Length: 264
Ligand code: NDP
Ligand code: 8X3
Image 1 (cartoon, rainbow, N blue to C red):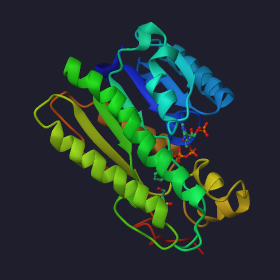
Image 2 (cartoon, helix red, strand yellow):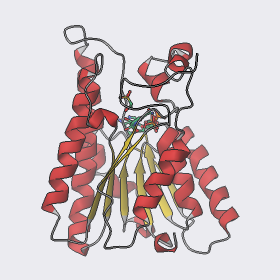
Image 3 (spheres, rainbow, N blue to C red):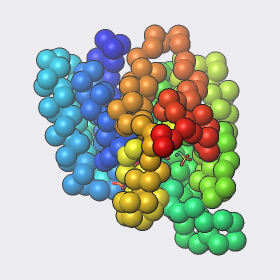
């Protein structure tokens, strides 16, 4: 992880789950971090956790953590991002496009337009806007790493997941096209594809119904945000000639979006 010392990381969706755990692990590895999400209070809590993790590491490098309130689906706000970023943190080395969500499991014909548009606006258009903004700098300085959080839903459609899996398949096609475009550069492009991770994800999916959210993981041990954070930080800390293109990560008792073993 010495390869990460003093680097600056930008993480979207840093206020909870995978994004928050990833921030803390990068903080431990001696990086600076721009923490982006819509909930400012939650970002400040993650910022404090990063300060504590960095202190505990004893490292001199890194240690600057800036919470920035930003909705990635707001194109004007994304364009104006640099005006909110402290000048010492404008030279980003690693972009982690993690912000994303699903609402509901409605079947085609019954899905609210606002839910369809919201998921595409965040999971696809937000990720693309953030990437466009950062890749310009990465191309100019001939370095950088874009890590997109896909999903098993990037590879496998399932009943009740038409819109969410369409957004994640879009992330997969966008990421793979960009990797091909950047093949003659030192810029790295990675897609991390988790299976079931217990975060706020299912609480958001079931609109705050915590018992419906909990039942998603009944009888098996899901992944944690920390498990995925380890994967992200590992991908980011490979030697510069190594590009982790894609990683699919399941809990041990999951084998596809719809196949899992549940203890009786
Ligand atoms: P969480 O709900 O815990 O975290 C989602 C994060 O995204 C939050 O920080 C949320 O913050 C942020 N976010 C949502 N919409 C926006 C937006 N428009 N602008 C900025 N930030 C936004 O879920 P996870 O940590 O599990 O999810 C992270 C990623 O992992 C998502 O892309 C998800 O699709 C993917 N994933 C999750 C899996 C799982 O089983 N949990 C499995 C596979 C992939 P705020 O509300 O403050 O804006
Ligand atoms: C989240 C996992 O199975 O709900 O990306 O699509 S799933």
